[in-house]
Image (cartoon, rainbow, N blue to C red; front, side, top):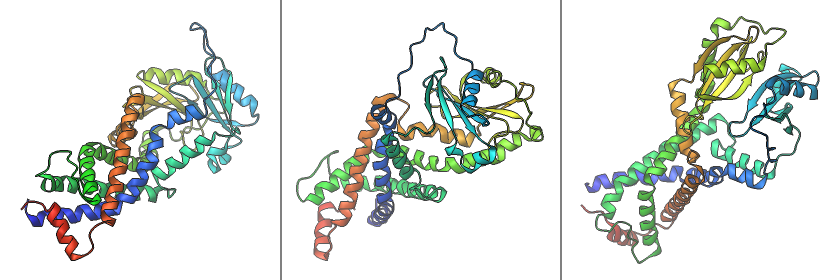
Length: 384
């Protein structure tokens, strides 16, 4: 590589790194506890153990759970029923009115049941564990720095800078290390040692940082694209049913779930959005599903069931661009291979933090005088 090209790549690497380093460092620090968020919540606030139930005991019917919840909050309407995919728990959400629900969807009452026995496990109004607040803080900082959609777009721009820094770093690695053994850390000044550490860790973690950075950037596109899916694709699919009013007496939610399961046998239900819900479909149960494999459990599909007749009205899958983003989600947090993979993700995250911190140190400790710059170039001058 010619000296002029080396200089150009060096300028690109320096400035793209400087632009994104502080923010990527924050993402790495906040991402570290998020990798273990499930374990942290289980360790710090273990949920009550599930009762041992004979395998031949029939589960309590879904309609029974819904009526029990309605009895706890008389005069409230059911907004949605949610299902845990990794344990037998069912949540029933309620609200005094749809207007109240739209005004504060997260502040409405709910109750969680053991889906097998009907025993209550939790309900709204209980104080969340302190660790939950910590995880929420880390997640919001990691997602958008509490800036909402502008924050996500900003993080997307930082992801582009990170990719440019990685590409330019690879271009510079060969010229600057051609006469060195791989992994060699030279003795001498502290800055020289940290330069070698920075280069070695950078090339070792290159693929991982690239994958995590790219999937993180894709995840920042998920929210606006999913909103478009709900605002454009879903209404288009519901066009033939848009004028159907919500019946005064709804058909069985359990029957609706059964018909939807039959239409999507390789999926697990995660939520039934009730007819009349502003985020659902008028006159229909909207049953949301996810895939069962680790890489497809974020891919959603929705089944529509007529709330009057209880008959299937149609099935809709996510568009290809959302599937691509959802497949990348497990790769970002390493949550598709159990605890061993999470530990590997954490080690690589700490290595990346070291790379970013050493890069800042190398910039701040760079030679200032002309003589020291000549001396520095004499130590690490790239070959012509």
